[in-house]
Figure 1: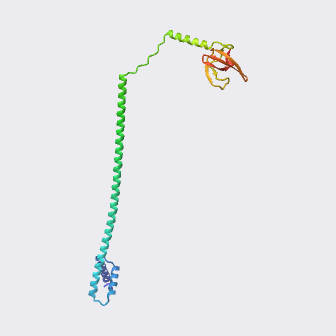
Figure 2: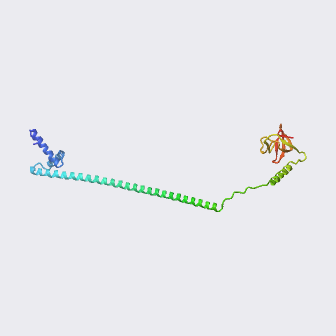
Figure 3: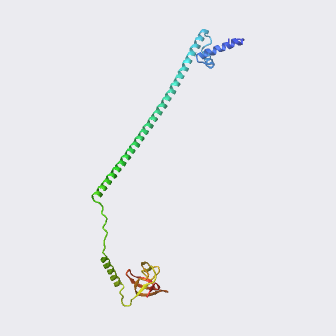
Length: 237
């Protein structure tokens, strides 16, 4: 019928053949391969035997194709299963790590709260102990020393006696009077020397010695603050 000169009959035969091949999950290529194999077996067989071989071969090809598809589906399912197990294991590991981190954080917070509570308790105990000590032994204000006017008078007299002893003249010495306020008394006859005391204007001193250093005259004086050097023009004598 495929070779019929009527276009309708040839088209109907072609559709029927395609439907038959589709029912058995075959294609025209599969049909050509099968026909080639049948031709190699022997061209002298009867038409009935060739038809049976073709049907059996088509069924075998269909079963093999189905088996191959089933095997591919099985392999794909096994692969998906392995990937799923790996993902589940990773999720379990992440969950365990997160649980461990949370537990460690909670323990650290509990330890910090405990230390803070202990610190507050220790501070409260220390404060209570200090309060009890203050209640039992109150701090007394130091007594202000009271000096009678007679005592002040004796102290001033002693100072005058010591000052008079310091200012007592020795042979070759004479008295002088400070002419400037805050007169620096130096350790050596030099403007860069260290200062040991300052004297007020009008204070009485003893001039022990007079020397000249360059163009400057220096006096070695003695007062209640001790001995030292001053400029010659700063002390009148």
